Image 1: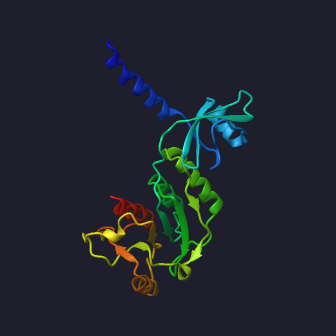
Image 2: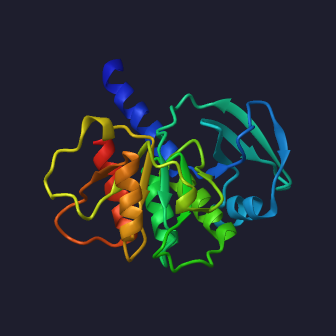
Length: 235
Protein backbone atom coordinates (compact mmCIF):
# COMPACT_ATOMS: atom_id res chain seq x y z
CA UNK A 1 0.00 0.00 0.00
CA UNK A 2 1.37 3.42 -0.96
CA UNK A 3 1.14 6.41 1.40
CA UNK A 4 -1.58 8.19 -0.61
CA UNK A 5 -3.81 5.12 -0.29
CA UNK A 6 -3.36 5.08 3.46
CA UNK A 7 -4.82 8.52 4.22
CA UNK A 8 -8.44 7.70 3.25
CA UNK A 9 -8.33 4.75 5.63
CA UNK A 10 -7.10 6.96 8.48
CA UNK A 11 -9.72 9.62 7.70
CA UNK A 12 -12.50 7.04 7.68
CA UNK A 13 -11.34 5.66 11.02
CA UNK A 14 -11.43 9.16 12.47
CA UNK A 15 -14.94 9.73 11.08
CA UNK A 16 -16.16 6.45 12.54
CA UNK A 17 -14.64 7.35 15.91
CA UNK A 18 -16.30 10.78 15.92
CA UNK A 19 -19.62 9.27 14.85
CA UNK A 20 -19.78 6.64 17.59
CA UNK A 21 -18.34 8.56 20.53
CA UNK A 22 -20.93 9.94 23.00
CA UNK A 23 -21.60 13.67 23.08
CA UNK A 24 -22.52 15.48 26.30
CA UNK A 25 -23.54 19.10 26.86
CA UNK A 26 -21.50 20.57 29.73
CA UNK A 27 -22.69 24.18 29.63
CA UNK A 28 -21.86 27.24 27.57
CA UNK A 29 -18.73 28.19 29.54
CA UNK A 30 -16.58 25.08 29.11
CA UNK A 31 -13.05 25.39 27.76
CA UNK A 32 -9.92 23.31 27.33
CA UNK A 33 -8.08 22.49 30.54
CA UNK A 34 -11.09 22.53 32.86
CA UNK A 35 -11.62 19.79 35.42
CA UNK A 36 -15.19 19.85 36.63
CA UNK A 37 -17.37 17.66 38.86
CA UNK A 38 -19.30 15.00 36.94
CA UNK A 39 -23.03 15.03 37.52
CA UNK A 40 -24.37 11.64 38.59
CA UNK A 41 -26.55 11.21 35.49
CA UNK A 42 -23.62 11.97 33.16
CA UNK A 43 -21.33 9.61 35.07
CA UNK A 44 -23.93 6.84 34.94
CA UNK A 45 -24.60 7.39 31.24
CA UNK A 46 -20.93 7.20 30.29
CA UNK A 47 -19.73 4.44 32.60
CA UNK A 48 -22.82 2.23 32.84
CA UNK A 49 -24.79 2.81 29.64
CA UNK A 50 -22.07 3.59 27.08
CA UNK A 51 -19.33 1.74 29.03
CA UNK A 52 -16.60 4.19 28.12
CA UNK A 53 -14.93 7.23 29.66
CA UNK A 54 -13.88 9.19 26.59
CA UNK A 55 -16.51 11.43 24.99
CA UNK A 56 -17.10 14.73 23.25
CA UNK A 57 -18.16 17.65 25.41
CA UNK A 58 -19.80 20.67 23.84
CA UNK A 59 -21.32 24.03 24.67
CA UNK A 60 -21.25 27.64 23.60
CA UNK A 61 -20.63 26.72 19.98
CA UNK A 62 -17.49 24.63 20.62
CA UNK A 63 -16.76 20.93 20.90
CA UNK A 64 -13.98 19.35 22.97
CA UNK A 65 -12.41 15.98 23.59
CA UNK A 66 -13.15 15.01 27.18
CA UNK A 67 -12.85 12.10 29.60
CA UNK A 68 -14.49 10.85 32.77
CA UNK A 69 -12.16 10.03 35.67
CA UNK A 70 -11.72 6.41 36.75
CA UNK A 71 -13.80 6.99 39.88
CA UNK A 72 -16.52 8.73 37.83
CA UNK A 73 -16.43 11.86 39.96
CA UNK A 74 -14.81 14.38 37.62
CA UNK A 75 -14.49 15.32 33.96
CA UNK A 76 -11.36 16.61 32.23
CA UNK A 77 -11.92 18.83 29.19
CA UNK A 78 -9.25 18.44 26.53
CA UNK A 79 -8.52 20.10 23.20
CA UNK A 80 -11.09 21.75 20.98
CA UNK A 81 -11.97 19.41 18.10
CA UNK A 82 -12.08 22.38 15.73
CA UNK A 83 -15.42 21.31 14.29
CA UNK A 84 -17.64 24.24 13.35
CA UNK A 85 -21.07 24.53 14.95
CA UNK A 86 -23.73 23.68 12.32
CA UNK A 87 -26.41 25.59 14.23
CA UNK A 88 -28.16 28.58 12.66
CA UNK A 89 -29.58 31.82 14.07
CA UNK A 90 -33.34 31.28 13.75
CA UNK A 91 -35.69 31.92 16.67
CA UNK A 92 -38.72 29.67 16.29
CA UNK A 93 -41.83 31.28 17.74
CA UNK A 94 -44.51 28.67 18.22
CA UNK A 95 -47.82 28.07 19.93
CA UNK A 96 -47.51 25.23 22.46
CA UNK A 97 -49.21 22.09 21.17
CA UNK A 98 -49.97 18.61 22.48
CA UNK A 99 -46.83 17.29 20.80
CA UNK A 100 -44.55 20.16 21.73
CA UNK A 101 -41.80 17.64 22.48
CA UNK A 102 -41.79 16.46 18.84
CA UNK A 103 -41.73 20.05 17.58
CA UNK A 104 -38.74 20.95 19.76
CA UNK A 105 -36.91 17.76 18.84
CA UNK A 106 -37.23 18.30 15.09
CA UNK A 107 -36.45 22.01 15.18
CA UNK A 108 -33.37 21.46 17.36
CA UNK A 109 -32.07 18.98 14.79
CA UNK A 110 -32.61 21.65 12.13
CA UNK A 111 -30.31 24.10 13.90
CA UNK A 112 -32.74 26.51 15.57
CA UNK A 113 -30.94 28.93 17.90
CA UNK A 114 -33.84 29.72 20.23
CA UNK A 115 -37.42 28.74 21.01
CA UNK A 116 -40.06 31.29 21.95
CA UNK A 117 -43.44 29.87 23.05
CA UNK A 118 -46.35 32.12 22.07
CA UNK A 119 -49.84 31.95 23.58
CA UNK A 120 -52.34 32.51 20.76
CA UNK A 121 -56.14 32.70 20.71
CA UNK A 122 -56.43 29.02 19.74
CA UNK A 123 -53.69 27.68 22.01
CA UNK A 124 -55.08 24.84 24.13
CA UNK A 125 -51.88 23.23 25.45
CA UNK A 126 -51.33 25.63 28.33
CA UNK A 127 -49.78 23.28 30.88
CA UNK A 128 -46.45 22.32 29.35
CA UNK A 129 -43.68 20.92 31.56
CA UNK A 130 -40.99 23.30 30.34
CA UNK A 131 -38.27 21.68 32.47
CA UNK A 132 -38.91 18.43 30.62
CA UNK A 133 -38.93 20.31 27.31
CA UNK A 134 -35.49 21.75 28.11
CA UNK A 135 -34.18 18.25 28.71
CA UNK A 136 -35.58 17.12 25.35
CA UNK A 137 -33.89 20.06 23.62
CA UNK A 138 -30.55 19.24 25.25
CA UNK A 139 -30.74 15.54 24.36
CA UNK A 140 -31.65 16.38 20.77
CA UNK A 141 -28.66 18.74 20.53
CA UNK A 142 -26.37 16.00 21.85
CA UNK A 143 -27.61 13.50 19.29
CA UNK A 144 -27.71 15.81 16.27
CA UNK A 145 -24.10 16.93 16.32
CA UNK A 146 -24.67 20.54 17.33
CA UNK A 147 -22.14 22.41 19.44
CA UNK A 148 -24.80 24.48 21.17
CA UNK A 149 -28.18 23.99 22.85
CA UNK A 150 -31.06 26.24 21.75
CA UNK A 151 -32.25 28.84 24.24
CA UNK A 152 -35.77 28.26 25.60
CA UNK A 153 -37.44 31.61 26.27
CA UNK A 154 -40.41 32.18 28.60
CA UNK A 155 -43.91 32.01 27.03
CA UNK A 156 -45.37 35.31 25.82
CA UNK A 157 -48.83 36.39 24.65
CA UNK A 158 -49.30 36.92 20.92
CA UNK A 159 -50.59 40.44 21.58
CA UNK A 160 -47.25 41.38 23.15
CA UNK A 161 -45.09 40.39 20.17
CA UNK A 162 -43.28 42.65 17.74
CA UNK A 163 -44.56 41.16 14.50
CA UNK A 164 -42.73 43.43 12.09
CA UNK A 165 -39.76 41.14 11.39
CA UNK A 166 -41.58 37.82 11.48
CA UNK A 167 -42.07 35.21 8.77
CA UNK A 168 -45.10 33.08 9.57
CA UNK A 169 -46.75 29.92 8.30
CA UNK A 170 -49.77 31.26 6.44
CA UNK A 171 -52.46 28.71 5.60
CA UNK A 172 -54.07 31.32 3.32
CA UNK A 173 -50.96 31.66 1.13
CA UNK A 174 -51.13 30.18 -2.35
CA UNK A 175 -49.35 26.87 -2.73
CA UNK A 176 -46.36 27.13 -5.03
CA UNK A 177 -45.99 30.88 -4.57
CA UNK A 178 -42.39 32.10 -4.65
CA UNK A 179 -41.00 32.98 -1.24
CA UNK A 180 -40.15 36.70 -1.12
CA UNK A 181 -36.45 37.50 -0.94
CA UNK A 182 -37.14 39.37 2.30
CA UNK A 183 -38.28 36.10 3.89
CA UNK A 184 -35.13 34.18 3.06
CA UNK A 185 -32.73 33.81 5.96
CA UNK A 186 -35.23 35.47 8.30
CA UNK A 187 -34.33 35.27 11.96
CA UNK A 188 -37.85 34.95 13.39
CA UNK A 189 -40.31 32.27 12.26
CA UNK A 190 -43.80 31.90 13.73
CA UNK A 191 -46.11 28.89 13.52
CA UNK A 192 -49.57 28.65 15.01
CA UNK A 193 -51.37 26.00 17.08
CA UNK A 194 -53.46 23.06 15.92
CA UNK A 195 -56.42 25.33 15.20
CA UNK A 196 -54.39 27.92 13.31
CA UNK A 197 -54.34 31.67 13.86
CA UNK A 198 -57.53 33.55 14.65
CA UNK A 199 -58.96 36.21 12.32
CA UNK A 200 -57.75 38.91 14.73
CA UNK A 201 -54.24 37.46 14.70
CA UNK A 202 -54.17 37.26 10.91
CA UNK A 203 -55.24 40.90 10.82
CA UNK A 204 -52.44 41.86 13.22
CA UNK A 205 -49.87 39.94 11.18
CA UNK A 206 -51.02 41.53 7.93
CA UNK A 207 -51.05 45.07 9.29
CA UNK A 208 -47.60 44.71 10.88
CA UNK A 209 -45.87 43.76 7.64
CA UNK A 210 -45.14 40.18 8.72
CA UNK A 211 -44.47 37.89 5.76
CA UNK A 212 -46.70 34.86 5.28
CA UNK A 213 -45.41 31.81 3.40
CA UNK A 214 -47.10 28.67 2.14
CA UNK A 215 -46.03 25.32 3.53
CA UNK A 216 -47.62 23.21 0.82
CA UNK A 217 -50.95 22.13 -0.57
CA UNK A 218 -51.91 19.85 2.31
CA UNK A 219 -52.76 20.58 5.93
CA UNK A 220 -49.80 19.76 8.17
CA UNK A 221 -49.60 18.86 11.82
CA UNK A 222 -48.30 21.81 13.81
CA UNK A 223 -45.01 20.10 14.73
CA UNK A 224 -44.28 19.29 11.08
CA UNK A 225 -45.32 22.79 9.97
CA UNK A 226 -42.52 24.23 12.10
CA UNK A 227 -39.90 22.04 10.44
CA UNK A 228 -41.19 22.83 6.94
CA UNK A 229 -41.27 26.57 7.65
CA UNK A 230 -37.64 26.48 8.76
CA UNK A 231 -36.58 24.51 5.70
CA UNK A 232 -38.40 26.84 3.32
CA UNK A 233 -36.65 30.01 4.45
CA UNK A 234 -33.24 28.36 4.62
CA UNK A 235 -33.37 26.37 1.35
